Image 1 (tube, rainbow, N blue to C red):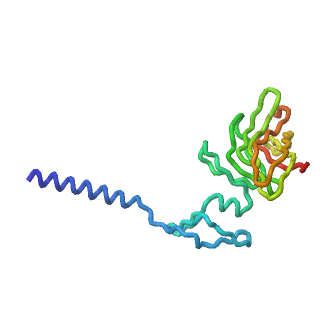
Image 2: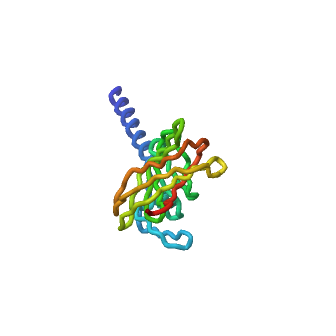
Image 3: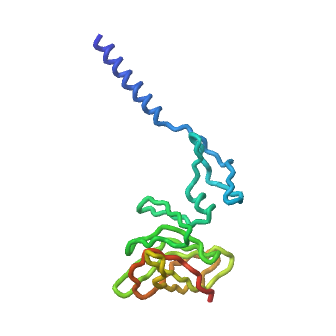
Length: 190
C-alpha cells in the first residue's frame, strides 16, 4: 500500500508540473505577410510580425524607421533608442551611445562616444559611406543644453572615405560644459 501511495503522489507531482509548464506556453502566429501603411505609404516589414491575442507585434527598428526616426540599441542598458528630433541624448563622460543615424543623405554615423577633459570636449564614432562615390567631408557635431540651446560644435575632417568604406572620426572642440544632447551635420564636402 505504501508503494502505491508513493507512486500516486509522484504521478501527481509530474502531472501538476506538466500542467503548470503548459500554462506558460504561448501560441502565436509568426508571419511576413502583414501589410503596413505608414502616413499613407506602403511599408514592408521583412523581419516578420507576431500576431498574439488580438495584438500585432513588430520590431522597434521597423516602426522607428517607418516613422522617419533614428533607431539605435544601447546594449549596456538594454534600451532601444528611438529619436525623431535629430538629436541624441549625450552619454555620460566616456560613455558610448550605440545608435545609428544617416547624415547628409548617404553617410551612416554610429557608436558615438563623448569625452570631456579639462580643456576639450570630443566626440568620436564611426562614419560609413553608403553611396557609390568616394568623399572628403567635414562632419560637425552640434552640442545642446537642456533647453535645446546650441552651446557649440566639434569638427571632424574626413578625407578619402571610399564608396562603402567606414572609418573612425574624431570631432574636436574646446571644452563645452552642460551638454545634454547632440546632433550631426555634414557641413561641407571638400
